[in-house]
Image 1 (cartoon, rainbow over the protein chains, first blue to last red):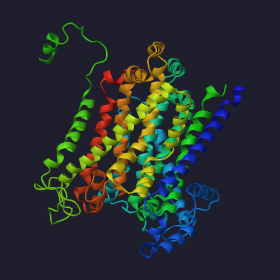
Image 2: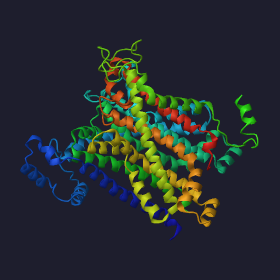
Image 3: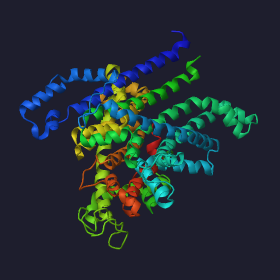
Image 4: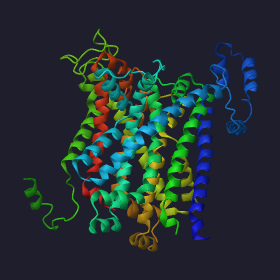
Length: 319
Length: 289
């Protein structure tokens, strides 16, 4: 195989692994929720669960078919955009999800726009002035944010911005969204919390990536020939650290998936995660499955993207 | 005095050991002290509690800090201090059980995969990598939705979430050790796989594995607290620290201290474990570097 094709071979291999992972994940999601104790038809019918009614409903829902064929049917439905109907309110899941998904994506998008520039400048700055007071403060802060649960960051944010300073409402929704100002206020709290959680990871990884490049001989050479510390980092080290940094950004954004579940619950934000947590309490299985698949797919996309960036930005594979 | 005692007995015929020692810096010591403190509280805490943790003792809810109720009272008027002492048992106990199971299983499988290689290694690695493609909190949510929440379910779920990571870590270390000369020699001597794993590889990956165990413990405490915070972890009337935060979060707007102390308890546990494993004694840390 010619050398120049090696990175593309690795990319295809990585995509294949992602696809395989997706199938295993969907298998796990389907059977974790499907093989639960208790019969769905019986639970749905409640008081009216005569044996005949249960048998009828099971046949109508296709529950009497073997699990594997239902799994394949479910996968085919997912692929064609038919997610089934909710057990609880008999609505099409696609309808339930579409608005919620837009809300969640908006939240994730705004968080990304806010956190990436801040995290990158802090991370690169900390690496540039490594060992300084600034670096130490940033390091201690990021470690603290990483070692406490997301809901604690949210609680602290509410305590500071809503209770003590009284700048922002504690609840995001229900507030009116008429003008830009009120809308910003409504978004502020979830975005602040999520940005903290995501940036902490990003700063740490960015700092590590830049420091690794600074430790290479050619950057030392730049310093020896008389380049300033700023020039050494920004002109000589940074271009070669861009791959690892992009990898770090994609990896940190995958923390959004976990963080968003907690944050949407706390701030009562009408996104997919809130829908899923509510579905868990009503045991609405088709809805849980669909939400879980949305999260797994976005998580998988982000970590696969991180790996692809790492492969493609490695010049040793391009020779 | 300690030093004198040692030189006269144990270290008499052995030369003074050079290189990595057991001592470590004060940051690590503080971390270790707080860790041990919470471990002790989890063990004896319920007997120290000034009030029964499940009993309503204050007829006012969200009471302030006072001489009777050292950390205030919760949304029903139960003593927060006693509930935190009792909650330590759930949080520390469940996390410890889960991390022990996850790391034991992961490390054993990882070492076997590294030594055996071949299809066993490939299938297991692919399968567990796929498992890593599921976000952890989500996995917990789905399982708890399906089977309902109880302490054994929580322990097994957390084990399932963190076993693949432990496997991957141990396997990577074991693969490195496996190529070293002393393992090749042992293999040439005709030692069994079991001997290779237990006598040659395990002692040499123990240090990093212990550090990894600490890190995984922190993750497990965080996910467990997150699940309890969502109402899917330890069920009322019992509560771990995440559950205590959930119960009392409404008190925040009333300025009640009830939600602050359980949060501080979680943070002190996770940060102290981080402090300890970042500053492990060199004797443990540098073993296989």
